[in-house]
Length: 356
Length: 76
Image (cartoon, rainbow over all chains, first blue to last red; front, side):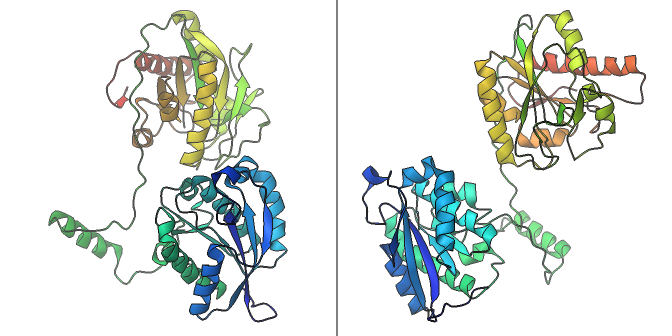
């Protein structure tokens, strides 16, 4: 909820990059953050359109930062800018629109996402392919725009419509209806027609070849071509990776039992087996009793040693572990990419991944 | 994770309890495990039999790594 400030106007802080801040083009993308009092660049259109919508606003400050500077120093910049923005006591923060400018989109998304937990309404806008969308759609309200500045007026109009709703304390129930990217937040509501009726109606349309729209789009998982088979195991370095959460006792890296934000790399040097004294399960998604009693049941070190001697492959002296319980696809992908880079560097030729 | 490691150039055998998840997400070489709380074990068996179960599952995974495939394959 926001109260109009003492002079009756809503206070807005606007974030823009070096170009819209009037500093320069790509050659000034390294410019450090600074503040302009009042509106700058698209801020003037923003103010104008709010007033046309009968909402009196004042852009009290325009915060400017070079696109490259922001992404290269993100933590420091946010540490500086968030308190600075708060100091203006804004009723709303607007960032962008960034269109298809990737660094700008990341900066806008980063700022809005950092303000959200502080209870400061913040909105931004960008083109659907801007990496800022994938990165920040869940934590920031992002209006969809055209892919370049020719869509400025429409973008600002949409932002103003959304901004007015936010200023009046309105809940954004369905981001898509407000012209925003879906956030993937699930909210229960009652539908006049029961699901069975809607399902049958949808099926009939599908059978008849009529257009229909799914109520729930299923995420798309791409495919990777299988790697060629290993011809001969002798001398091949094989590594173990697990999403079953087997970690050294005490979980020294504090891998979360759900929605893991990290993975661990642990030494297998000198270990012929695992047991309850040395290892445990940190995974919160299955009954850990059996895994804690004998961690080999999830990370099979004992039998890998036996087979190593029998078949002649080499052990990789490290294993990688995370907890695959509610772990986001993005995180899993990120962990695996990093792990793969290390393993390639270390000469790993094959991996056995165990999951519960 | 199986897919990303494979994408980087390392063949992966995925021993997992819930095959459908592995298939949906797109792992290529899939080996069905025993059960969710003990994918490579069976606490109902005496230890030496349990170890044999584990060894055989690993052998399947190793065989999968040595098998040329064109598409997702479950090695059961």
